[in-house]
Length: 239
Image 1: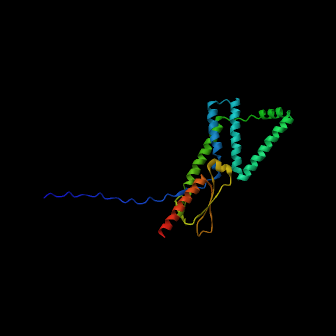
Image 2: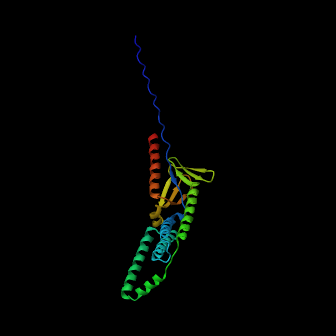
Image 3: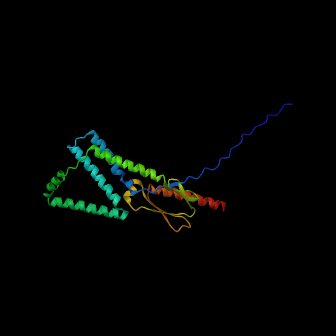
């Protein structure tokens, strides 16, 4: 008699469902919106390092570029520009420019005087100034990044977590029926980093959680809505 070969079945490993991936929310200080002047300072430092002549027109033009960028950056930092305010500001600037053009056409003698006054202003800064400015902001941004690792929120399908403190203290809130409101208070901050304000209202909590200056707020809101929407579908399937 011949023995029939015994077939050995390969055991099938049952894969466990992957752990739900949460959405990380970090509220940053307003200093992060100074990155355009930081980048401008690094570019100006490189240009002045390559051509260090402070008496040249090139050095003056480089300084003007930095000053204009720095001034506009401070305006964005100091004031909020909602959509209506931004359109009003654009209308005012356009009116002033058109009015200036009409005045200069009617009074051409003003143009040489204005040109002489502008040419008399000759701001200048050496490469060391731009380098130190860049280093100071680099150190600040490093500390901002480090501090953000110790204070952030995480939205999971079934809970809202607040990680904070040097020892990773944790607060838990119920995520089902979590109300989410998105606000874009400054159109320029939204253009710079996609930033805005998120207002989270957990169920059963009287106090709303307000997170300012959240980067890429629109994509974060979509991810949270999708995450919580999937949980609602699961609940309905098992009910």
